Length: 300
Image (cartoon, rainbow, N blue to C red):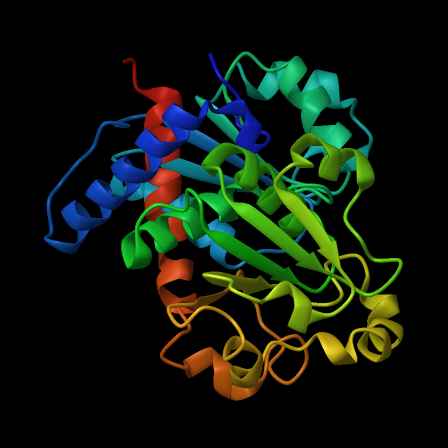
């Protein structure tokens, strides 16, 4: 029984195989093939943060694979009313086949997984967003091939997405160049896990030099809404634009995990620039997570 709390829960070989399986499942779904390896399996989806892509992709994926999903908000569970995490984990894991959690502190999901008897999937915490990275890696592979030896630039906040890109640099063997305003760097202990592949910069122009992939995220994540105005002022020079991409490799592609605040972290026109693959990236949440569910729930 395996959990998926960060990308580091897979070996590099397992990650590579999972991405290839996601591409296969995507092709199958596009040609209308019926594939139901999760018949009668149930995924519990616990959301302590709001979601569009995560909820729809996991729920649709379970249905397409023959199973079902149960959506649980803090209003729907005793977890939101003070039941110990350990107790919720023990009870829910006796009733369902896997549990997906989107929450705040990463420690919450670690404690939940420790007491769960079924696979637990991290659908976002304040520290990591590994499911999004599965989709991002799949998208790059589809458009440009392997990430090994490539250069990736992360522009903006040193947040959960940035941390998962650090994990991906270690797992996929690419160089990661991170540009953040002073004081918004990724957590030092996470950077240190892939220090030989990660470089920190103070301007986007430095970071995107030679980049094959440029990625960004909103300047204020969920739970940071009160900081929106302050961050907008501090991050104003970190907008990703077509002109910034012109500094990168000629074959560069742009990604954003969405939702995007057009005119803030990304210029409005870049979202539909030929170098942008954000819509493929969004769709690939469905296929990558189906591959993950199959990996965790179907006996090898």
